Structures are given as structure tokens and as C-alpha cells.
Image 1: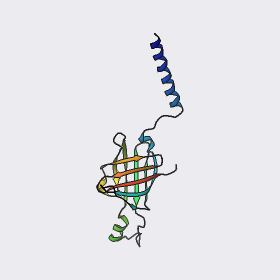
Image 2: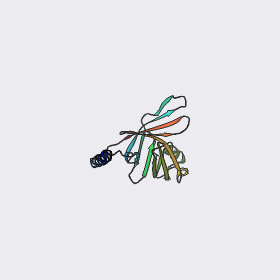
Image 3: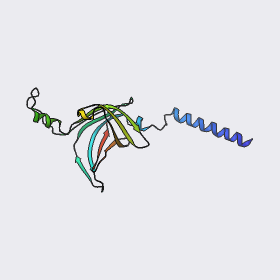
Image 4: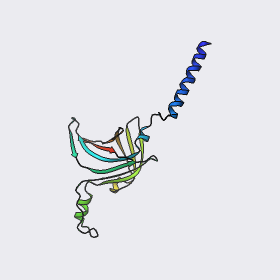
Amino acid sequence: MVNRRRILYLAAATTAAGLAAKSQGLRVRSAKERIVGLYRLARVVRRTADGQETVTNANPTGRISYDSAGRVWVLLAPVGRKAAEDPRNITLEEYKAMNAGLMAYFGSYEVDEAKQKLIIHIEAAANPALSGTTIERVYKLTDTTLTMTVPGNPATDNVFERMAD
């Protein structure tokens, strides 16, 4: 009988502690909850298979945003893009130069915490070949940064810093 009472007591105490922690907001948030926010591109790093790292874009310009409904948008633009001489009459060469290195898309996303992957379903993109596709990125998420790795050799780490709300 003592064992049964002790088990019931421990079960009640554990339940009460869990309810108290939850009421105080001490619940561990999922990666999908923690990723929500606006980030600025801080740096781009290329990593070769032998571990060599090179910062390829020390002063990048870009934003990425994730919302709680599962939507994402991205705009990454190289620094120093030259504007067309006449914005109403852009030449083919000017258009190519303005769009070189530009990455823009929007869509929805999923987080696979077990595999540390972001699955992004692109609805529309500046590059029409990406519209309607799904891309996967390995991610690392801290309180202040989000690193998304584009696979390959060299692999590319896009390091984003969380912006204030």
C-alpha cells in the first residue's frame, strides 16, 4: 500500500510541477517557434571539403523573414549594384548587371528538427526556374543567428543575424 501511495504522490507532484512550469512560460519552444522573425544577412562563408573557409561577401545586403503561419520571404542583393542611366529605358546589359547575384523569393516553409533542415516551398521567385520548386537547407539556430547551408563543394553558409522586433 505504501508503494501505491508513493507512486500516486510522485505522479501528482510531477503533474503539478509540469503545470506550474507551463503556467510560468518555462516550456521549451520548438525550432519552428524560435525561427519566427526577421533576419539580416551578416556574412557569406564558403567551406571546402577539406575545411578551408573563405568569407566571400563581407558586407552583404539581404533580409529573410519567417512568420508563425509558415510563410517566408527572401531578398538578397549584392552591394554596389549600378542603377540604369534611364530607369524607364533599361538596356539589356544594364538589366543583366542589375540582376547579377540578386536572390528573391517567397513561399512557405517547414522545419524538420530531427534532420536540422528547413524545407522551403517557393511559390514565386526573381529566377522563374525556382518558382514552384522546393529547396532544403541545413540550418543552425541560436538566439541571435540563423545559419543556412547551401550544399556543395564548396558549401555556402549564409549567416543571418536576428533583427529587433
